[in-house]
Image: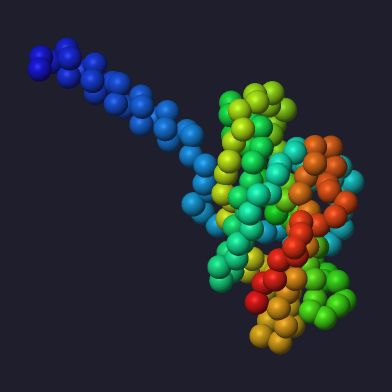
Length: 156
């Protein structure tokens, strides 16, 4: 193979790798949840997203989500009210925030989001005493759902 063909092949492979890296559908790092005491006046970004699956492993909450996009990066945060609902077992209220940055692309994107629940553990009196029930609210596009994701998620 001559040098010109090798150069073209190298460029094609390089561009393919770069293109595939931009299509990643997971966030390998654990995103820490953000505790709040007061709902901000302008709210949290709430572009529409569908939560399709929830799982917990140790202190990691994984949310599989679908949303429309494909042209640019979307940002996700998970906000948790720092006070738990007074019930047995106690319940935490969490809001998944999605900022699409006004994107108009319509490709259906599936992504796994991994959140570190450790900040919630610090708010619990005795985590070994009771599990914590997570009430997760998804953004609907302009507001958050009125009802939490069902079934409620239990975190030991």
